[in-house]
Amino acid sequence: MRFAGLVFLIAASSFAQVQNAADADFGGNTGVLAPGSRAVVGYIPNAGSAAGSATVFLLPVNSTTPFTAQVLSQSQNRIVFVVPNEMPLGPAQVIYKPAGQATQWTSVTIVPASLSLYRTGPSGPLIAPIVDLRGSGVASGLTRPAQPGFGVEIFGSGLGATPLSQIHITLGGVSQAVTYAAVPPQTPGIHQINFIVAPGTPDGCYVPLVVTYGTQSVSSFLSKTSDGKPCHHPWALSQQDLTTLDNGNGISVAEIQLTTGINAASSSRASRQESGQIIPRVLDAGQIAANFANPYPAQPCGLVSPIGAAFFGALGGTPSSPGQLTHAGVTLFLPYTSSSLTAPIRDVPPVIAPGLWTFLAGPASFSFPLPPPIQLSGGAPITINHTQNSTITWDSSGYDTYATLHLSLKSAAAPVVSCTIPAQAGIVTIPPNLLASFIPGSVGVISVSVNETGAGIPSGQTILNGAPVLALAIWSSTDTRPVDFQ
Image (cartoon, rainbow, N blue to C red):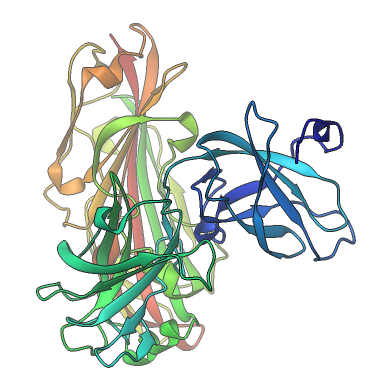
């Protein structure tokens, strides 16, 4: 079959999203696929359209020879298909025709391998049956963890033609014995990878799992205990709560969200904005697990696009019934918002100060500690020489191992510098190769934000709207200052 005349019959490029099927419910529009992988094209359906038969072709750029994809299913707004194994690498077009609609196309890139794991949340938990030595299997979970000597089956798409010899798995940093990696006949486009849990693998509800394939890797996590009993949750969740999460349901959570931040125009003109609110939520296993999967791992400073240079502050939501916070004679009624008058940096202390706070909403109370707000050393503006190492420091004495600092440095017409490091470090050095694009004489902005992750998030039980709930104190602080580049 030739495609020479088809370009005159299809519609313009669509707003479709094409992605690895394992990312379909959680990932972005990557458009990066590997031969043999299961993929999804999501599109905006025509009014009144219905599911039915669909066709998908992949056409390499500068070619008139299409490759027919195996269509596995079509719903009203997406088609699931398998990328042909013989598809050449490089840019290509996905040409698709949903039932009863016009033929459309969108661009993708075909690479040798780009593995994504099937999971139940943006970062996990994994869909990973645990198989004991007798061969019977059970779905993994917080109450059904893996244990030494048992087999684990994980699933992914995008492994390409990576041989078994180039697939390695670590769980909690311990190497695991990979026994199988292939596409079962009954699941086209899905790779199944089996391994045996090794002795010495650490216990935990969220033990990091890394699959290395060739020179690339993908990570998630798995629950594991030495005796197979339910894991001990870092937030001290009851076994009933763990069972609720394993069954795909959510538990009630009261999020106490607190923010405090300095914004300085100069050393003599700075202000502090603060807020506090309480948000009732119902969180499932994936949403809770995201707090422990370290979504912002420590990494050297690097360049990112301006779109990616965002702060990581408190989440939004609808405030619940009023509660109150008390600390050292200060009482705040939630929701709370304040903005201090302009003053020198040293004269804008926080109301949401470090120390022990108590939340009260009805008959129960929840006490939790807060670390000191982040405050950079020195004044404002900060002077940075674009030809030298630039060192940024702060007082790190009040932070625990779970506190993470995010830094962004930006100026007009220059890439954004981004760093993610433990707040305990107290120092970060930006090398000159990342500063080279900043123009001498120009001005910019440096922003740092600190928040707690995982087990560092204060947790406990309290009462909200008359019912017992898990309470979480979600805290963050920021410091934003102008920069003069030399």
